[in-house]
Image (tube, rainbow over all chains, first blue to last red):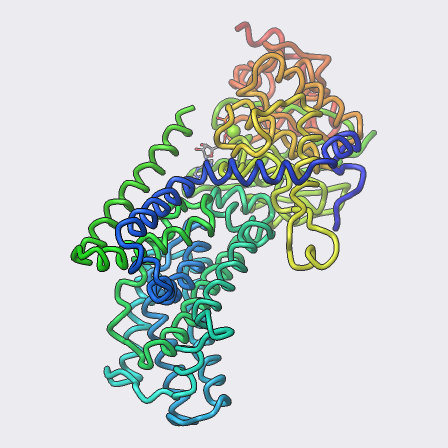
Length: 353
Length: 281
Ligand SMILES: Nc1ncnc2c1ncn2[C@@H]1O[C@H](COP(=O)(O)OP(=O)(O)OP(=O)(O)O)[C@@H](O)[C@H]1O
Ligand SMILES: [Mg+2]
């Protein structure tokens, strides 16, 4: 480090005083953060929902099959939402994730079928998966360059790439889904289970979420994301390379959308070109529902997980108790509006001090 | 004669059609508090931004230690030991005090975790507490987001941050504007302490008694130009007001004269011999 030692702002006394109890301090911080971050309340909503459905239909709702299908259905959205959390914490938005997901699935499928065919071994499959990831990364980098370097508002940039990525996917496939994806892929990644119990899709989504959450909460990369979302100019003046960081954030979102494309391909055994038009809104809703502020600077990965599972639990629960599943959209929409209202109200209260 | 540690010559900065700085000079000296004063809109904050790498001047030269320097980013200023308390504070309001104090210079955990970018939050919290204690700031909770603090507390955090990192020059753009009496005294005390450690302190303030209390020398900006320089001992509030409003310039000085004076007499001049008669305000 290039700072001179004599101006180190850590007086010895202060350090010695506090060094003994970092654990207690950290725990307190986590609790009060969670309370402030608004995600506790939404977590309670999720708990109440789960309890409610469990009491109403314990056999059906708590069956291993149902629990597993809730998690599996949520897996791809969770992966996309992890990237979206970074984007929104940085005070941006990424509308392109659904299209990028489709694009990645298409290029992955085309690669696999092109070089391996339906009975291909793992070589072509892995290459295809990597191509899918790279496709997502490329769109993410495109978004990042346009947002960070060309200074075009992210809403417009990602609206543009939404159209371009989806259009490209349709051009590549002629508009019809690629169906003859390798059997190995769907059998292992799509339907397979770790130790015969946990679906691989869920394992991957959980790992991505945990790593994404840790990076956001504990690393410098995460800290810069919060700082930029909180006050871009302050971050710049503090010497943070804001443009480069934003580029990375959008690249990450694209990469994870690419991963979700791979997962979706493996799970559905087809590219589902028409099936992801509202993924972007679902991810944004999940992130915001989880207490992340659309104004940036505030948010947790824990909240995002809760935000992903509220619609998932509602959807599953409504089916089980015999309510039309369309009510899920109504309920999620209402909760979303309420969550944003509370966030704005809290901000205004703070700014008026 | 002592040479200026930081010197700006003929700096020009234009915002659209607004000529915020019209070729101004400025100098600050090691171990000296230089007050930079002037009316609202005189260009003080713009000059500070030009000298801390936030804004690129459209013309002029900047010297540190007699060497010409290029301040093309805040980082390049920081590397040279130049720190700034901005008028708008430049704090990340959603982060806590320690995070703001270490913003852009986060401490990382030792070993592998640190290489992975994991922050040493405990060390930063402790260091931050120490830096704030130096200023006598007490916060309701160490992890409260800065945005939830009072205006004065925020200002103290911005001051603490700049003081903690400055090794050569520190700009303070109205650092006491939101402070109560006790905190203000604390900040002035810190300013003196920082000065005594050899740092060049540049204080911007509209509070003339405060300026006279803490400054060793005073430079006056008017309409984007330096119009006068004083040694603090030689002036009273009326002289300063006269120089800021132009009454004094009209009666006695004239911008060109000032520059001529500056060159021959350096830091300790302003042509004050003429001033008292001219501006009976
Ligand atoms: N970013 C900007 N865009 C356009 N004009 C600007 C900008 N910053 C400053 N100005 C203009 O430059 C001039 C000088 O402004 P500056 O903020 O430097 O004044 P100041 O001396 O700091 O005033 P105050 O005492 O009110 O803080 C003003 O006329 C202002 O309107
Ligand atoms: Mg100003």
